[in-house]
Image (cartoon, rainbow, N blue to C red):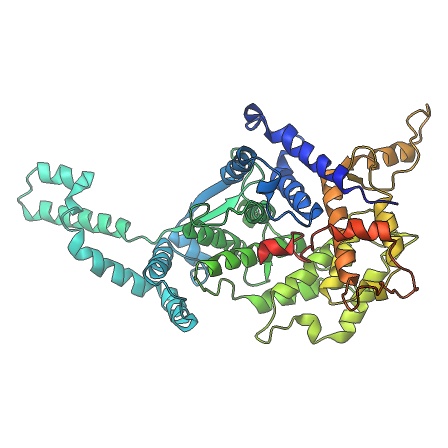
Length: 511
């Protein structure tokens, strides 16, 4: 079978043009897909970049107007919430969040220093930031001289001045009001920002999944400069993610409202939170800002390991069934939580690593890949399973018949209109009059969609670059069964970009 990259490129392009080219449709998002709107944009944009190896940016294929519309749509999903200081202290999060004064201090320090900031100085600053009482004192001292003239501009003060207070009682009242106003000015403000699934802020609140997709889109659009998204906003997004962390148990919540309910954690939220912090850290480093954003690594590692089951897979939360998608999230989360020696949990636990590899290999069954024991094949699991193995530093050519895996993915592509479906594209059964439930269900599964199309492309790129090596020009790829990739298919696969194992984005975007 052949890989029709031009068809898949048109498939992704048509998705963008149909939904975003008309400005009148920008405000009218589809009710069916609005809860995954940002996710869908990421799949399409990243898929467009993955298909053509020579394409360095989206500006080479999309008009500037469309890129600007996408950027505006993403930033319209950004929501801002103010959290009172007393709630921060009640939840004991004052050591981890950035107040408005902390953020101003970081920004001012980077503006005044054109060279690379010394990490030791940042470390001293972090220790200083934890002591909020000292920050309050400094703030009062600085503003005691400058704000005295403006102290009487407050409404209460003006009313008292107009009454020409002369008695001791009235002077006492005046002093009390001025002290209250002074306290209000000195309140430490904590602001959190996050991305909601779409721009309907009255229906959807910010969550960690949409926040990760939004940051990934900004990378793909090359909109990560100070003018596109400021340092202040990035640090407030960090506040949002860290505020959702349960410090005692070591997992992340989904959104601010979910903090009110009992929750045992979710592996997907763990991965999205850590991945978002990692990407934000990359942007800050480009701006010469070096801050240890996240400190609760041990608690998070312990919670992830509690989701490791006896069969060798990872579950969504402790005690549930192993799943390929949550296993992908667990492995990459542990890679984000490396220790001081730059080693992850499985670097010290070889037996558990072997069990995990065994469980992932068992997902390959009957010329396809499933996500759980006893479940049917699904082409998207080609990405979740194979990328998990690559993240564990395993060579796919030593574990599988690579040609069978490639054929399985290619059987799911629509050779007429482009895109990939959930299951194989077999004979068309539309002309049949009588359907059983399972036959009609399979027909729905044969419809292409952006989700399976994108992850199919990623899986093919992952396979090719994992088994690819350059020793001699005439040397072919040798696998465990002595098979080789056909020449025509090899040429198509070589046109794909190398995909990042954790973020499902072209590697050059992050570098």
